[in-house]
Image (cartoon, rainbow, N blue to C red):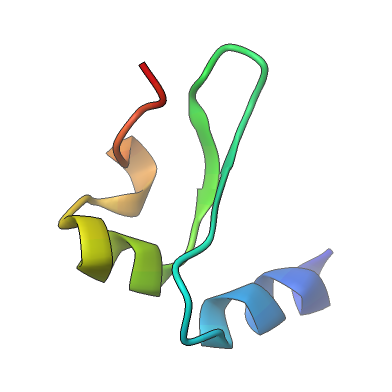
Length: 46
């Protein structure tokens, strides 16, 4: 799991994963830069 997070963090694309309730489960730094969000409270689905 740690390796997967490291790989996702290094991607030049923005990556975000939501849980079943629409909360951000993971967002890499690039996603935060693109959408000007803080990963922990990144743009919700709703």
